[in-house]
Image 1 (cartoon, one colour):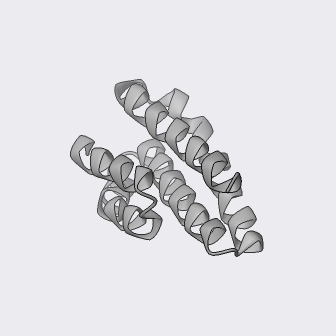
Image 2: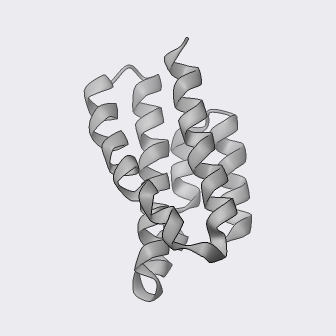
Length: 104
């Protein structure tokens, strides 16, 4: 999963939000059966990337709806000590990219 998360981070930095969304799809589905907390964290990241893609396209209503889902799941990061640092880095990156594209 770390490899997928590293790819996701690079894509978010490059504002490849749609493509980043796809990178976490398989791990999200895989963890749904074994670890619902990690699954929901990944679901949140997928929604965060989708929200940023919508924002960048000017779809603010869609952005607001999907960003709320990201916010709903980001609080679960604290419940996953095994991946806390990695997940916290991604959470922070999504927020900083949101702020960056919002200021353009």
